[in-house]
Length: 49
Image (tube, rainbow, N blue to C red; front, side, top):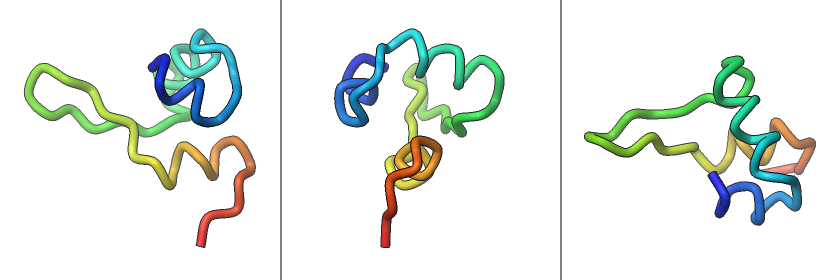
């Protein structure tokens, strides 16, 4: 979460709340929960082509 937060320039708690509420989609890969990059960027209004 902290890497994702740094990538988009927000506090990691914002990412955590977004994941918990379902606003930010995640994928479970074994023991790790991953955030797909494009949906995360779109969630914060970053234009991704």
